[in-house]
Image (cartoon, helix red, strand yellow):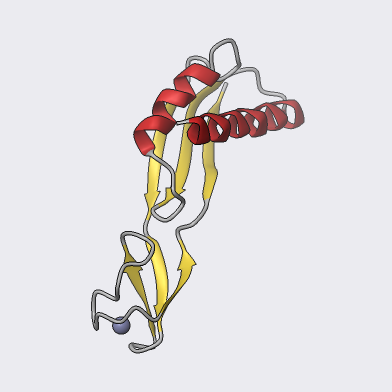
Length: 114
Ligand SMILES: [Zn+2]
């Protein structure tokens, strides 16, 4: 939970920086893309967002979570496959020789501002 709380604070900081740069006063909607392998609890993130946006320009904003699947390169199949969690095996061949290539990050995808 502490982890998501500080992530939420980071999100608000980014939004406030953008507000200064682009001169908007209020945020209506935040689309937050969270990779399946980012190690972020979605529910904790939603709760944390409500707490840290209090008194900020994002206080009344709606948070929309956009899931991004985990991606890895399978050496056996020689192609990119989708995994649900880190240390999963390849869904096609069962191999554990996977190299994670995507879905580890969290980023603000879009902001609807006023
Ligand atoms: Zn495979």
